[in-house]
Image (cartoon, rainbow, N blue to C red; front, side, top):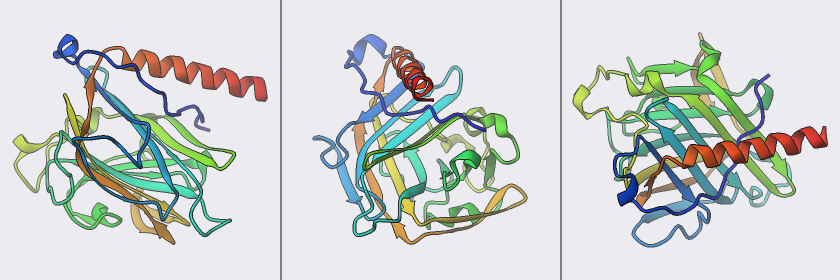
Length: 255
C-alpha cells in the first residue's frame, strides 16, 4: 500500500538571483482562481473547483512532486475529483507542443492502488494522448518504485490529490517522433512554467500490459496557461519534507 502523505505546502519567497544556479525549482499557486499578474489562464471547475497547485522538481535527485487541492464537483453530491493528466513546460502553454514534453496520467480512483503513467506528449488530444506510438516512458504498474508517495485525501469539502515520483526515466527519455534536442520532459523554470492540467471526476481508467488503454470520465475541468511564476530555490524540498513530516505525524495521531 502506498502512503497517503503528500499535500500542498505554502512556500517562502526567496531572491531569484540568490539561487540562479539552483538545480531545484518549484511553483506554488495558492489561489488557482486568481493566479496573479503576468500569466494567462484558462480554467474550468467542472470536475471540482481548482483551489491550489504546487510542484517541486529536484534535477539532481530527479524527484518530482505535484499536488492539487479541489473543492466539490459543482452540481453533484456523489462525484469527486479522482484523476488527472498533466503537462508542464519551461514557460509557454504546453498545448500544441509535440515531442518536447512528458504527459502524466495520475489515477487515484482507488487510492490504495493509485497508478502513474507517463508518455511523450503529442500536442493534441489529452485523455488519449497515450495512444501515440513509441511514446511510453514509465508505468508504476510495471515499476512500482517510480511512484514514491501518493495522496488522495478528503477533508471536509476539500479534496487533495498528489504524488511524488522518480523522474529519471522521463528526464533521460529520447523521443522517437521528433528532435531529441527539444526534449525537456517535466523540466520547467528557472523562472516560468507553462501548465496544462486537466482533472476529471467519475473517471474510468483501463490498462493493458501495465499501460493505459482507456481514459473516460463524466466531468472534466482544466487549468491551462503560460508564464506562471516558478522559483529556483534549494530550500523548497526541505520545506516540503517538513510539511510531509507534519502531515504524517498528524495522521499517526488520528490512527
